Image (cartoon, rainbow, N blue to C red):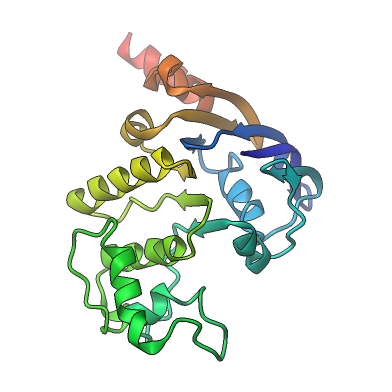
Length: 247
């Protein structure tokens, strides 16, 4: 469904992503795993149109992606829920969820349908009750994270990129988001899941790609993966130290 081929990005002397090649299958949760500085964030930015690659190609459903900015990536069927909670704090929860769907000065969704539309999106995964009329900035951080996720989902993307979005959530919301991800993948969508929590990786992934120092070390199915094996691929030094300590 989605392929990145030879994707590279550097910032000055720093190579953030080095000829990364991964094929992503429709109907799967594909986890991207790696330590800080491994290239995960750069890959997310490249697939969101925030930065442009220096080399390589992104192909979606057999066609090269020519999008050059976030709005064009969204129009092509991509949506990203970022780890950073990006909200308009003084605007209502409803307005925040529908932000990407409205124009700057026009509301494409009629006023009478806005609340219902926002409520329907949140109901897919939020267990915590959220006041749709409250200013988004007045909500606890976990609820703000759910609003950010709802904004991505409201666009009806084919490819949904979730960047460490479960970190702030309580147990009930986290489990509900996981169930939503499974259902979404089961319906033929593609979910790119960025996490560093091994329990989430083993519980949710269909496929796993490990990044280290900007390179793709391996892409493999969850069936052949173990937490210890993934840690060795992700951080060989740390894995060795841990094994020596336990020995």
